[in-house]
Every structure is written in structure tokens, then in C-alpha cells.
Image (cartoon, rainbow over all chains, first blue to last red; front, side, top):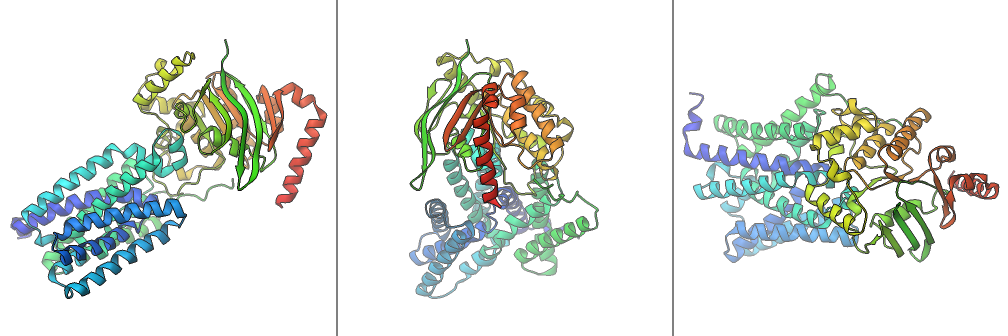
Length: 279
Length: 265
């Protein structure tokens, strides 16, 4: 039967938690991509690798150390960018390599790679416990609610930071809040596709939906739909084909992007943004 | 009684030790349309940024009689259109979504209205119009004649259309002062004319005080009632007729503008 997959408890948990993660990643990704922070997720997750290693090294539950290290790293990077005028991509590179560097160092000190570590690197959505599922759902609800509440401020700030500042928005504070929410989103999502593929969930559905040439609200809805579809379809397909869910999810997102690009090239969807008339 | 919307007193701004603005002082009465002229690099944008709290300065800047050093409480009520907004060409927002970004939260509006009443300015525009936000957006778009563009994606618009959208975004909060920094530089003549019509309408019908910098002396002569001429220092500030009848001043301005122009090429 085609629907037997839904009967397994591990599948149900995986699909529910995966969908929640898909929603917050695409919501957060909208702002990250538009602010040219596409690789920020990667930087945070590599930072998280350092955090996980720290947890395994010190015996603290690795997820908590991952949250702590990533959020601190992200805040540090924001500060670094502001006070030294290092460009965004360079600052991301600094964060990424220092996080991963510490991770490799601590892993070697702890005695090499373990199963736990592998599940963080490549995701393990079908292995999550009931507690993990509840935690993911709870955090996702919190992240989604914060982003919905802050959507107007975040949109204005993303579109034109200076104007947002003049209109009375506390831009610096908003930036810190934004970075913290991004950190929480990335660490929570690691269970689905792993540290190494996290950017796929943040970036791919969003650039696909932006190609459709719609307004903000519709773009966000399209992005969430693509994201949830990729995750659900990816998990089910990986079960039948006996493949890794994370890779399957990511390649489905890539396929949707390529198909959308093709449809756009053939003129089937969206208007191509015309070259702006000379100003 | 007319009130002073903006008072700039002895404002100086320095960049890396050199003065970009040197003791500039002028007032803008409520309802005025002040045209600021001056060559490129004269410090017009820098002065605007100081008024908007984006630039440190010495001296005093008062909005409706009220001075605010770190963050002026009335800033949210100032509409500002900069020379050029750099945004992602593919930004997924429609024209009406961009205009709606200019809306202020109700709480902030009430706070600002209280401040204005306290400083003796009877500001009833905000209370008069507690329409729905979507009505306000449409009304602002109607003012700049772009109502039919409301669902178009922002990246599809031409330069002149974009600047009109940004004016609508500034208008949607019912500003008490509108600052336009060379809003139509490099836009074709036909579009400029339409744009000037919009500026006139906003000033005369909506009774919004406007400070507008431009290189277009002809347009300033036609639209502004007061003129300020500056190049680091303020050379002139007064009635437009006085400025345009002063041949020496015009000559100085044109020459320095020409020089700057030659310098740039």
C-alpha cells in the first residue's frame, strides 16, 4: 500500500517535525536571502558543530551547547561586522571556520567521530524521540510566532535599513533579535538535514518562490509550500528508495528550483524583471 | 499663526577633520516649499542626514520648536525620499506592500501627536484620518498617480515611477514635513514634469511642508516659495523672487555648478 508509511510512528514523528522545520526555515530564509545572508545558516551550523563537540567533550547535552555556541557566535559576528566594517561574506567565513575548527579540535581530543556526531552532520529525522518531536514543535511555534509578529519591522528593515531607522525602528536591537531567532532556527533544524545541508532549506525554497514574480505575502506562502512539499515528499521517497532523507529532501528542492528556472526561461511563469530604465 | 516646522541653527558637520557643512542656519515655516540648490558635494545630503538623525553634528536642529539630540521624537513623522534607494532588483514586494512599509503603528502615532500638542502645535491630521491602513495606502498611491500600479512588483518599475512610489511611502503616514533629496535626478523630462505636479499638489492641497533639494533651477523657480543656496556654507536664504533677481548669486551658483560638473567628467 502506498500509504503504509504513514502508519509507522517514526514516520509520523519525522513528517510532523520535518514539516515544522520546513516552515520556520523558509520563513527565516526569506529575510536571510533578501539581506544577502544566504550562507549565514551554514556559518551558524558550523558553529553548532563546535558547540556539539563541546557538549560531547564536556558531557553536557550537545544540543544545549550547540544553541549557546551558535547564538554567541552569531551575536559576535554581528558585533564584528558593525565595529570593524568587515564585509558580510568575510564575517560569515570567519564564523564558519572558527566554529568548525574548534569542533575538529575537540573531537580529536574526545577520541574521534561517533554515531551521535554523524547524526548531527547528516541529519537523522527518522530517529528522533517523542521528546525531540515535542521540543522541535514547541521551538518552531515560538520562532514562527516571533517572525509573524515582527514581519512588518523585518520587512522594512530588510528593504531599506536607513528608512526603517528614521521611522523610529530600533534597528540595532532588531538586528540582534533577528540573529538570535536565526540561530535558534538553524540549531532546531539540524536534526532534519544535518549541519552540512542546512542552507539548502533556508535558501532553495526562497529563491524558487522569488522567481515567481509575486508580492511578499504570496512569495512567503509559495516558499513555505515548496519547503513543506520537499520535506514530506523527500522523507517518503527516501523510505521507498532506501536513501538518506536529508539528501533526498535537498535534491527535491534543487529539482523544483531547476524546473522553475526552466519554466521561467520558456516564459511559462512570472514576468522577467525588466532591466531598470537608466536613472 | 504659522509655526516653524524646522529650525537649523549654526549646524556644522565635519568629516575626517574637514568641514562638510560650516555653520548653516535657516528656518522653514509650516506650509513652506523650500528649494535647496547647490552643486554636487555641497553638503545637501549631509545636512538632510543630520536632520534625520543619521549624522552627528554640532549646533541645533529643532522640529516644531522641539530639539532632540540623540533621537528626535518627531522623526517618525518626517517623510524622507533619498536620491536613490538600493534594493534588490528581485525583491518580492508589490508597490502597495512597499508603500505600506511607511505606515506607523497606531501607538507611535498617538505618542507623536501628544508630543506635538504639548509643544503647542495643533496637529489634527492624524486624528482626522484613522482610516484603515489599506485605504491610506491607496490614497497615497492616488496622490502620486500610481493607483493602477498597486499590484505590480517593485522591480518592474522605472526610475521615475519608483521615486513616486517612495513619495507615496513617505506620504502614507501623513508626514508633518517632507524631505526630498534630489528625487528626480537623471529621470527623463516628461517624468520630471509629472513629478513636479505631484510635489505642488502635496504642498498646496495636502498642506505638507516640503524641503526639496534639486539642480533644476527652473523647477525651483516655478514651485518653491523660498530658496536656500548652499555650498558648504549657506550663501542665500529667502524669498524665491529675491534669489532669481540676484544676478551675482545666480552667476556664482551656475559657475560653481559648472566647475563641479567639469570636475566630475
